[in-house]
Amino acid sequence: MPHAAPDRSKAALRPRQALRRAILPAALLALAASLPAPAADGVATYAAGTPIALGAASKWDFLAVQPGTGHVFAALGDHLAVVDADTGKALGRIGGLDRAHGVAFDTAHQLGFVSSGGSDSITTFALDTFKILHTTPAGGKSPDALLFLAQTGRLYSFNGKSHDMTVIEPTSGAVQARVALPGKPEVAVGDADRVWVNLEDLHQLAMIDIHSNTLVRSTELPGCVEPTGLAYDAQHQRLFSACSNGRLVVTAADDGRMVASLAIGEEPDGVEFDATRATIIAPSGSRGSVSIIHQDDADHYHVVQTVVTAPKARTLALDARNGKAYLTAPASTGFELRVVAPLPAGAVR
Image 1: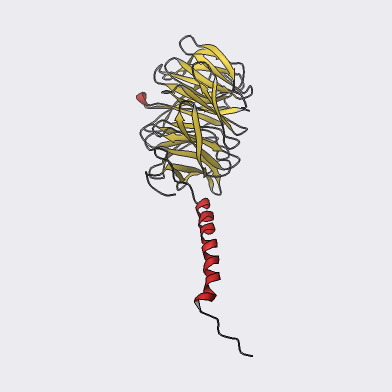
Image 2 (image 1 turned 30 degrees about the vertical axis):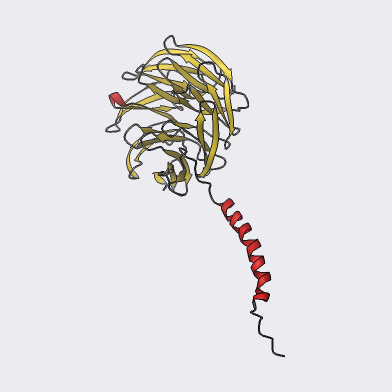
């Protein structure tokens, strides 16, 4: 029996039109919910960039961007890999290291520094040629993070096993002072008068007077387990401690009181503050992502977005010229730099 031709009359179409009118708004709402929300005025939006190859290595730790150049120095076990992040070109390699950790720069004298935790030493090299100038004792056991302060002209080494900070004259490498700490130091920041350093095993933040080289105080970080990364907002006098349990704790630099605490990804080993964009960038090694956090004012913050990086990408460094963050991550061909960059105003991810 032949099938009857479909009824194309307006009466027959009305139920379908009504159904479409009911479904379309719901579909549009679902689509809108799946798209990234536009950034509010004054809030930067970020996206992942093209990775940069670093080469083969067995270990990795901190990295640093030489100010004003875009040159990234990445600690990779027995060497530093140096790349031009603007072009992706490999620039050099500083070898002969033993469990390389921290990197710092004295740009006024074109000097770079890297700590070797395995040999309790610090290697000084020329920034223009990458030639090693000398290797000297760190003055403590298992030197980890390094900090150079132009205000004092001194290099500070934070030594994990001996639980201390050593003060070093950078040209000669001579140790001038030692400050005992109550716990294991991690990343440090400072200004003309003070240095702050996370104490990983005590879940505390220590403050040191660098004129007298004395410990002023050590303050608990509420809700923080194993603080590692540390960043500093000098204008608002705020410190940002990244904790392994997935918290970012914000404290006042003068008295150590907590002013905010936010959820981030677990296993960070760094954090950066971009003063130009009022943005904190916090990595997560376990999630393979970074949290982008906007500073609304000195005491108020909110997470803007999460950008995917790579598993185990937990250390990072900021290029202050352009706001790009670089993270070292294992890759199939060795290691690579993962890039997270702010988009131009009005751009869509």
